[in-house]
Amino acid sequence: MMLLEGRIRRGLVFRPAWAALCGAIASGGFHWGTTDLVRLVAVMFLAEVGWASVWAAVTSPAWADPLRRWAILRAQLEHPPGPPPTQGPQRGALWLPYLREDAPGGALARWLAALRAWWADSARAVAGPVLNGLLIATLLSLLLATLLGPRLVLLTLAAFATTQLAFALSPRPGQPGAISQAVVWVGLPWLAGHVAFSPLNFPSTGLALAYSLATAGLIRTTDDRRWVNLALLNLGQALAIAILLAGGQVPGAGVVGLLAFPIVVMQPWLRRGLAGESFVQRAQWPLMVAMLVSVVGNV
Image (tube, rainbow, N blue to C red; front, side):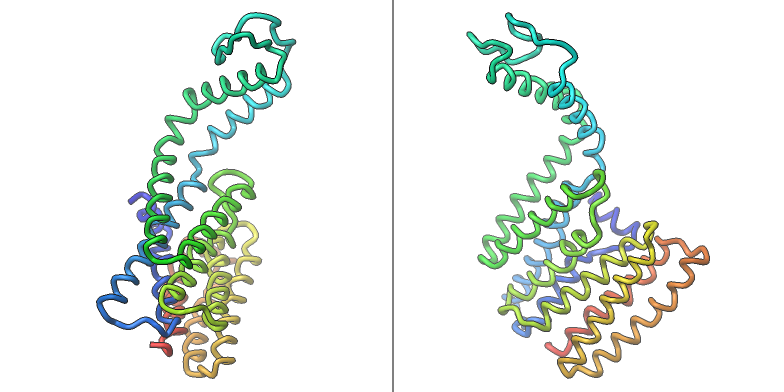
């Protein structure tokens, strides 16, 4: 619920589920029958509640203080202020009989004691609820993906790997990369919706890439490097139009171009005081409609 409320405040509502819906329509194998509808709802639930919740837990700002404290503890372990005691167990450490403090086992005991103290003092209260949510979302995602088939399992593992990569490469907790976020929110859900009903093809994969680029630019228009993000946004829309034209879908390309027009027109106002959050809330709707228009020819 907190994840959904956060996306509503930023104007990014149900984006993974919407991308999964567009991918299913793009597959050409989806039909409005009971079986396909149940399967579609399961895929949308997997993307929106499973993958997006794992993303929110791993990239949560709640990790900032525990990780900072662990870095301090690790520095103290690697560079202790004085020589270790030569006999007797260290206070608060795990006591191992017949173990010297300067032996490898003693170092391991000190690391385990520090880890236990770190978890008890700083990590459990802050990161404990996040870890609980992460565990539930991970198990739910794997269960749903297993029921939906091996291709969804592979995409689920790809979503987890992308999330971990975003966490590892982020400059600080709570600030993941825009492209990684767009891949988990748009690109992979689009592919999941497609492979749930038919094998992948080039046009659908290209559209997933195009709208991932556009979303990456859109969700980071509040950053200092605004011109780079706007370039990604415009590049993604242009790529989608090019793919539609290459596939002979001239009317669809024209409508997508018309939907891109207000997004481009609003961009100069970002330099004249228009808040980035307001731009995101206004620009996301024509972009989401463009995603749907791009695939309606496959219905």
